[in-house]
Length: 303
Ligand code: F6P
Image 1 (cartoon, rainbow, N blue to C red):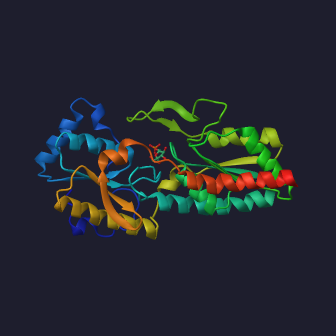
Image 2: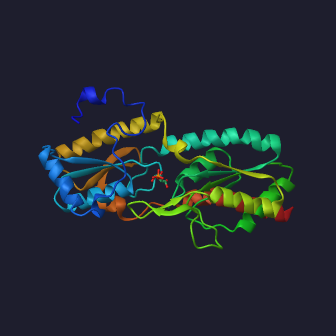
Image 3: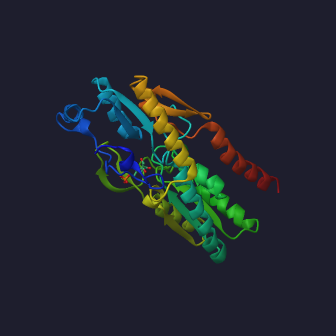
């Protein structure tokens, strides 16, 4: 599809992709990468701008290693690519989840319930921690820190003992019970990148909390709602700036690199650096959340 100005007119407020590309792994298919290269050649594509998260960009890196002129653009709601401060899509997801937490507060408060909100985040808890802070969650559980469900229940009991009658728990789909090795999955099925289909930790956790506290506990699984609809202004501006950064990189023949945000500047980083390791929630963010909870615990002990 020639992406001239006419083809891209009006896409700014739209989510998803007008190209209808999807997360597929050509490296897994016999001659998959060679077929991609032949298609690029046949269509006289001078350079490939790959827009996606670690899976898409790891394939882009493989194509670059085979000689394709590649530039990457960081797009994933998970915000877990290294080398950049933010990926686009993340801010939109956080805003959707924050609004959902605000709405869930109504039922939690009206019915004295514990509400568990399950959000996306396979290896990194960025969505959970940002939306949990913004939505005033009482407990936030992320993949970076396996949790002890007895402690979670104790925290909720302590809060309710201090005159609050409801609690909100935000849990990332990739969070792990300290007592169990395995992630909670929907089925044993794996995608082309070897990822199991996660989901279900919210329900399991809710049952465990209810059993330990006796408080009525319900679950809300936000799923793909987090990944749909119109992007926020922040994401629209960021995506526009990444687009400009990427095309400038093509003109400068800066290949094998990804447009990235550092502070408020668009820079470029090696693709291999961006996809080498998942960017996890950093210590400062964790201290902000878990530090506050520890203070509450100390205060409770001191009476
Ligand atoms: O990588 C983005 C992501 O939204 C993850 O947070 C989530 O685990 C996964 O995609 C879900 O993918 P699918 O729609 O293929 O189930």
